[in-house]
Image (cartoon, rainbow, N blue to C red; front, side):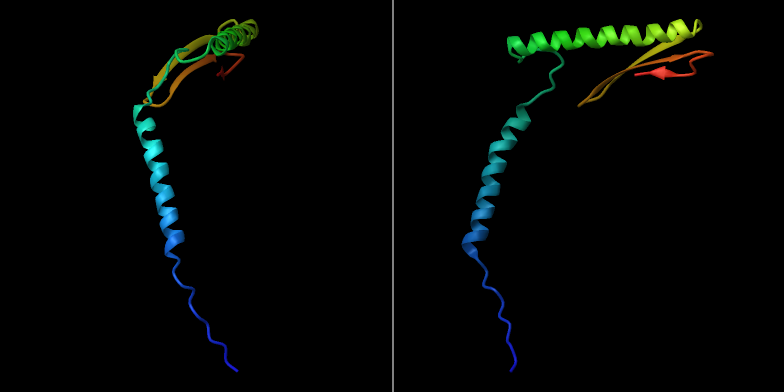
Length: 107
């Protein structure tokens, strides 16, 4: 006895539904993505979020001061160099210290 294999019929309803859902998703996402712009500050945040962002920035500044302050205690000749890189979708603020004892320290 030989078994014959039959190809599954093309399901037009399923494929039409998938294409329709993809089109709806695209129509919902694209207008918002085109209108969005980078936000460099706290505008758009709630009062609570802005307060948290302020505390976080203060904390990072204090830790940065302690971090490089300790490196300066270890190495009197430490020179610190700061570079700011701004790109379309990201900003980087790099800080590097170099000296005879601490060859390289940075964030």
